[in-house]
Picture 1: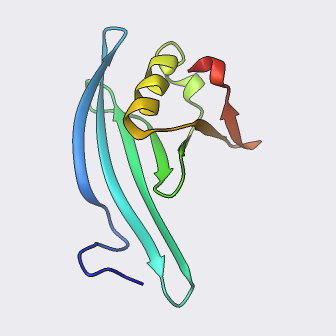
Picture 2 (picture 1 turned 180 degrees about the horizontal axis):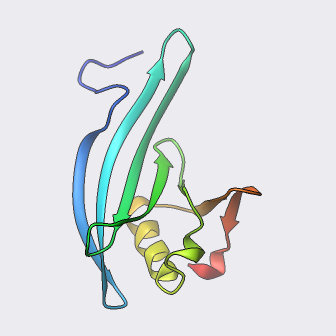
Length: 118
């Protein structure tokens, strides 16, 4: 099932871009990764978006599996970018055709971000 032109078990297809939201610049590093193991019978094809501030300090990461139309923040975005979150979600929804957003809460697992935030 492995295709010869793809890279497995390490990042590839890198892209960098900047979004300005509420007069704050967010530097975004995007990459694709395919984690797979034929013996263990798993294959995960996903992208990661890493958001950083103007100083290059990482703010948060988001993961999207390529066979799903949802994205998951790997932290609670309300604690990091609460004012900018609705605009970030709108941009992500348009750029990646996303229907639902989730975030990881250490105590409660993945929580859905309500649509009225978008």
